[in-house]
Length: 84
Image (cartoon, rainbow, N blue to C red; front, side):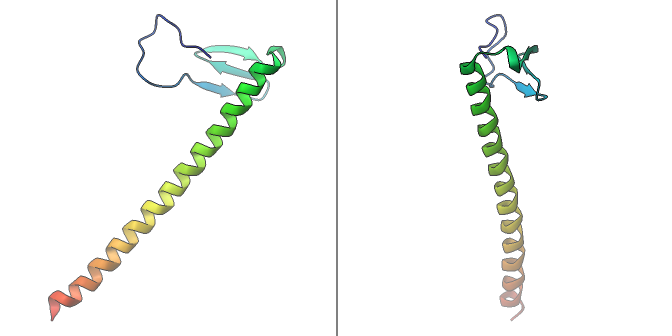
């Protein structure tokens, strides 16, 4: 999954998208069945980490929503102080 040396290094990870039977890395498609055991292990690692990243994004969204709710509740309580 090395980056193409001719492409500008923008700090982003190379993309890896899989349809189950093949994987696309840097716009090139590879059959999973043709990959070495080591390459398949790295693909599995990427899929695991992608799942972890998605889980963290979901947790972030839940936390952000909760924070918004807590902020609204705090403002509601502060209005009571201002009203006295």
